[in-house]
Image (cartoon, rainbow, N blue to C red; front, top):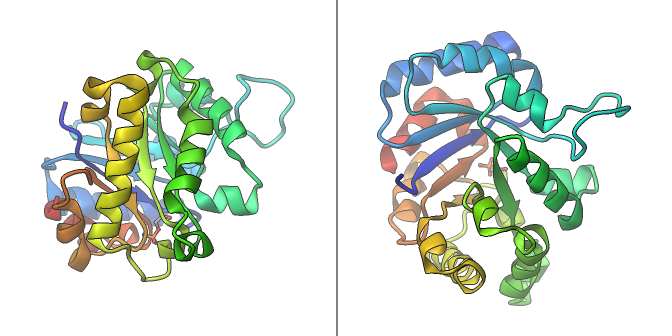
Length: 250
Ligand code: PGA
């Protein structure tokens, strides 16, 4: 399968009705997409969007979070098995907003990744450095440590299910994108890291997305980098025209 994909991360935006209209508009604009297209939608819309995508090959739905335990007394939480049974294919894990606002760290994210894969979901694992780390030139050390903690314990069979999203925190929702050189450098570093642990066949096939202010006017240059396999798109995924343009850029 091709490495490429574009995933939208709607975050806590759109009501179910608005979400339905957004998916309808994207389907209208893109038809059968030239690459995998994933909608990361609010939990309450997962089943409806999954249903809306029936008979539309190339599209899939992603959750934005899940609990690490399979079931039990965890009021308000949702398990991997529930998501899989509802037709969800992917789950975004370790997004910087969950690290920041829900206190998630890479040990917890590792447990979520393992639980997701066990239930048949594909985790989209997010990593990335904050601005001060970038300014000090320590991004490879810090992101490397995140990836080591979150993915280092996985087996080769498990890592094959994982999509990595490199999202420098300073680029998320700020309008400041990493330059294509900065993105390529980190993606190359991550792919080499995966290669060192899991071998080149797995490293060559793992999908590594870039996220952080991807827009129609910068997508093509980012996606042209040899190790940038697509994007995890926040703000621009809420507008059908922008999102479709980003998919076409890939
Ligand atoms: P952004 O968000 O595209 O709005 O910067 C990206 C993300 O948080 O995944």
